[in-house]
Amino acid sequence: MTRNPMREARSWPPAPTAVADFHRRMPAYDPSLLFDAPDLAADLGIGRLLIKTETRRMGLPSFKILGASWATYQAICAHMGREPGPWENINDLAAEFAHLKPFELATATDGNHGRAVAFMARLLGFQAEIFVPTGMAQARIEAMESEGATVTVVDGDYDDAVARSSQEANERCLVVSDTSWPGYEATPAHVIDGYSTIFAEVDHAIDATGLSHPDVVVVPMGVGAFMAAAVTHYRDDHRGPTVIAGVEPLDANCVQTSALAGAPTQVPGPHESIMVGLNCGMPSPIAWPRLAAGVDWFVSVDDDAARQAMRDLADAAVVAGETGAASLAGLRALLSDTSAIDDLPDKGNATALIIVTEGATDPCAYRRIVGRGMDSVGRVVTAMR
Ligand SMILES: Cc1ncc(COP(=O)(O)O)c(C=O)c1O
Image 1 (cartoon, rainbow, N blue to C red):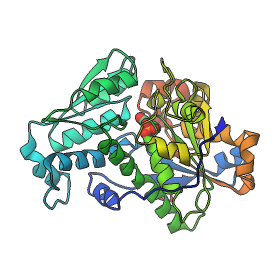
Image 2 (tube, rainbow, N blue to C red):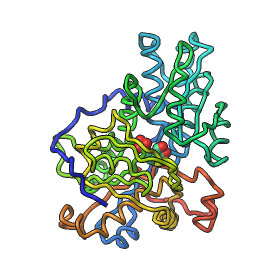
Image 3 (cartoon, rainbow, N blue to C red):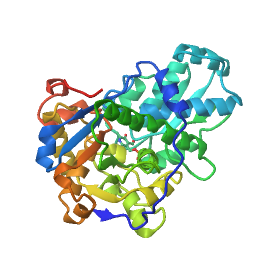
């Protein structure tokens, strides 16, 4: 674990309010659950633990659809050179975009983003071409295929899949990537904006119940797009100080490595963590300035810590996949490190927020790790929303 040597006092403009309005018109949109986990809070030695569960978002098992949907919409508008006509729901939107067919969306993924892009393509009546690293669990590939996507396994890791997907762009194919590269920045920036809905929902639920806003927020990091959204939200000028910690796997901690080096730095693979959504060797350039200046602590966790967090979350009635559980593993590591205590002087009364970003996307692995199937984990009954 390390304190960020590049931290600066600065803020960023908030995501446009049009994002939340767009998401409200998506099928099965509902704010995801935020709830209080008093037993886990006591175990961690803090006053309150708030868990935001992105385990069922618009019918998909991760938060990624929030970024993929908004970025897809924005990319298509840019491609058409205009906004669509008035629309109320996804069927209206598909009709507005129908003249583009045959049309395709492409991306690289380590699972969840690709499924979300494939889902958007299906809703809009487009094809989807998804590139994945070697070794991806069959359940995750099948989940993308179930959306009608063509899945191509690239000989290499996630970064190789990104390079391969970038070659797909043409007049009839838009690349909807959550990471950026030189000359390809607008869509990944919209992905970051899309994630803002999560933090807007958290604020809304907290304000509605009169609880205090979090003193510490813990977010998992792959290429860092999701963390960039967290930094944008919590480094707002009008907020009090919020400690922000980013969690990465030990052998793919590219954001931490980059911050210590003072510039984006590749962490070479193979990246073999079970937290597959975080197996990235390079931060997204478009996210990097916010990661470098906005995060307080970088926490690297091993797979055993992720497994323990999955079991702890199951005991709290949350079905979290390996990547989804990383934020709890990171919070535990942060709170047990004495050097971080200075940032949380009143630790016993502190409120922490973790985002469980993924459900059990590999049900067989889930059963093996947690010792029971996801259906036997209870249900949260007292969510704040
Ligand atoms: C479930 C889950 N959580 C967190 C992340 C990390 O997001 P980012 O790559 O934007 O840092 C990912 C990325 O794929 C993911 O799938």
